[in-house]
Amino acid sequence: MKDALKMSGRMLLPALAALLLLTGVVLLENRPAFTARERQMIRRSDSLMYVTVLPLDSAILRTPSADFTPRELSSKDLRTLLDKMLFTVQHPSQDGVGIAAPQVGINRRAIWVQRFDKEGEPFECYLNVRIDSLSPELVRGPEGCLSVPPQRGIVPRHSAVYVSYLRPGSSERIREHVEGYTAIIFQHECDHLDGRLYIDRADTVFVSAPWAEERKAFSYDRPVWW
Ligand code: NI
Image (cartoon, rainbow, N blue to C red; front, top):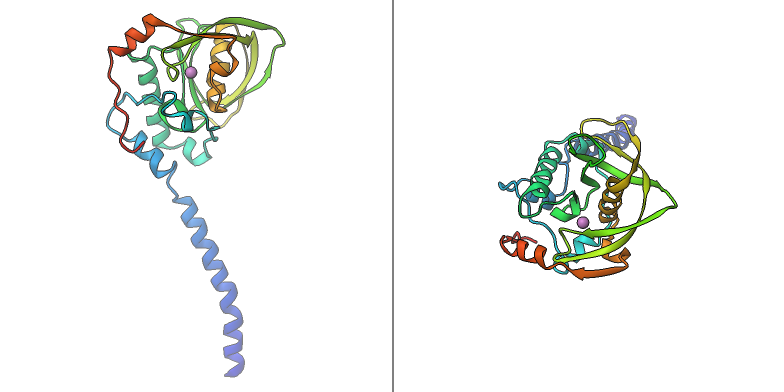
């Protein structure tokens, strides 16, 4: 009897450890994608998302963004986020040529870029995107940012880049060489994902009056939980 008790006591620990491990795996598997705050922002009813601006939202705009996990990459919330980001960048109140997730309050590596180098100039989205290398040649041109109204600046950028990214619904990492204005948009949007803004790189920054007037015509609702 005593031996039997000793035996079952010895079995108990491994059994408990296995149970704990199993519970951990089940909890991880069922862990919701995105944080509660991110889900709340993504699932709001309106398609037009609040666009983060300086100086009010500098904490978000200056925070480096994290990659999406495999679970998040296949989630409905990601699809919703991307749809809303596209709606927002194309909305007459914004009218941008690119947008990064921190600009809608989500510190994740997702961007939309208008591909001026493709026929029809379509908007395309890129996930867990990175700039792998930059051409040595610099070009200077005017830039603005939805998050830095109402300024514009003259910014030196590399004339060509190699970018790598995932496309929605695919786990295959794609590497692409991009040149010209589209390469500048990639640099601008990827900077957002690293907590950088064009004003950090600009030679000169100036206030663009017509743009300021245009934006005044729209009112912006800042979510209460911000
Ligand atoms: Ni921007």
